[in-house]
Length: 157
Image (cartoon, rainbow, N blue to C red; front, side):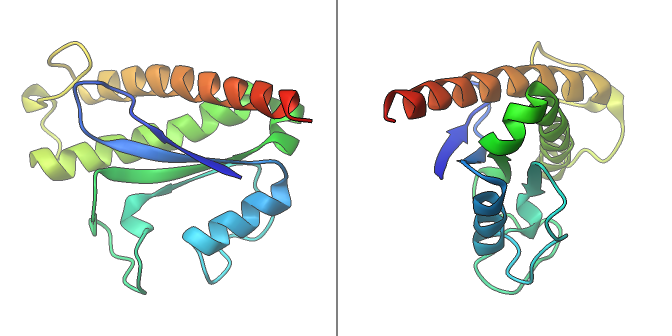
């Protein structure tokens, strides 16, 4: 298991944590250790993104209970990535994009008026553009990290 911090935009100071495991079983244990001591959804998932509003060091799991600039954690494993590849990455990046958009609204105070939405990768834009730009950039960064880590693991065998 290895953890990475993914900063999707250089000019925006929030990140998500990416945890890459060798096996599905290792991934379940990592998520149980860091996010869901009660066990979460079971063992049917191939990747996961947990928004930070559910990450705490105690039993308080309230929406909006952010304690850092980390807005969530993505869990991936090579066992399933070898079967499904980029489909898992893009799916989990979609969850990350929703979490980012919710995190952004919470800190900008914008709760739905797209005309006043202050952040988008290229200036101002509506919520769909925020989502899509984030998805595009997050997918690219995660894919690079996964491929680099896979190469390094292969060289260490």
